[in-house]
Image (cartoon, rainbow, N blue to C red; front, side, top):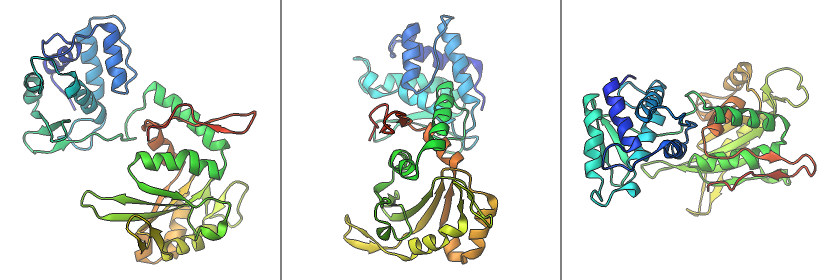
Length: 327
């Protein structure tokens, strides 16, 4: 996506506070603003307006879902800029600030507005499509995210299956909006009924979907002989049938329900042959219920989240979280 240089500079002037309805930001405060946007941009002391405009152009070059929606991180910058807690005393509802932002946006065919939740949204004037922010993994990683990617890769290579579940998957699914996440654990295998975790997800319509998860630490393949640290897909076939056929009790609704979908998650690769083998073994109805996640999926989703990578203490073999998790 491209914005005209004139319009990028106009938005940059709002960020640095050269327009009266926005807080003035010197070099260090510009860096602080982008930190608030979860961006690793450090102002280098050059002319503020042109430097910020260049950063905005970089964000616009990132992929977006469609041509009539703004890229995720560019939209996040606008939402952070227009947060109502930064309102000036002469503009308590930020209507004047909104008018200033809409001048450059309207020239590009967009309109910003506040929703009922007081958050900023941006709508494409021609298609009426509203840009929404999500932490998509399908974008370039920042240097800090690349470092986080390498740290998590090392952790996944050395952690146990229980640690993968408790330290990575449970926090990740909570972050993604799943509810009532319950881990069966590995102390009493008779209680698992083929699943390591079950959870639920509430749709915007308030309908509830239930998910069961079967986790394997290593690579999941279809080889005739299972290698060390790898799992053969045939080994989880019966567990999968148990998962889909066994009812779970939801204490919030006081009802017993069947799992709607089953996640098969591997800390390593899930080979194409393994996916095909399982697909051929299941009938069409059950096949549509299966979702796969392998190491790459875990890495990409975890890196763009606000979660911290667990750190393994080599002396005590204890698992320590570097900072308090945000949930």
